[in-house]
Amino acid sequence: DAGVTQSPTHLIKTRGQQVTLRCSPKSGHDTVSWYQQALGQGPQFIFQYYEEEERQRGNFPDRFSGHQYPNYSSELNVNALLLGDSALYLCASSLGYRGRPQHFGDGTRLSIL
Amino acid sequence: AQSVTQLDSQVPVFEEAPVELRCNYSSSVSVYLFWYVQYPNQGLQLLLKYLSGSTLVKGINGFEAEFNKSQTSFHLRKPSVHISDTAEYFCAVSADNAGNMLTFGGGTRLMVKP
Image (cartoon, rainbow over all chains, first blue to last red; front, side, top):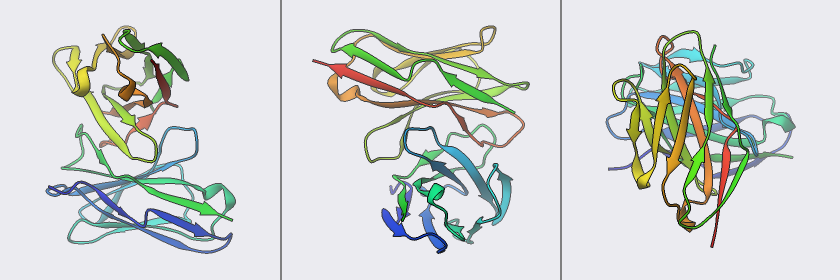
């Protein structure tokens, strides 16, 4: 039973570029959330997708956008990259959302030069 | 809004000793509580969760936590740690009325020494 898978595992970009990160949820899960984890800090919630719609959003600018496909997989897009966007980006999935525990992937390490 | 405070950024402990990692939360609504562990270069693994019912929750790898509503705490304990328990531990909450968006604490690095 595959868990949450993310691609790529590492990525290097320069300021001003755009990036797309991908996530496949755990088998049977229908809700995908994205988190940003800066070095030495706890993860911060970016947004959550359910039924192909953004259901909740954290305190992140519009440069961060996402999408969920009918097969429940998801993408995180970040435009106009800043040095401060360097972080580990974690995808988490769950079956439904209210009170349901989330299962995390190993993340994508994004470095901005 | 919710907030989580992990009172210790680092906890050094000798192998086979007991350990407690402290977590306090703040919320104006009912919450669900979680502990996750993160090993180097990996994602987060769920250790245990409190959704309702018994306030003493048992998780994987011999960990347990106790929910104390009056003190708004959810401390993690293990009676005897192993070298392999060395990792970063995160306490997290989600509000009963806010989907399952997680708010995390800053983490506690558990360092088990031989």
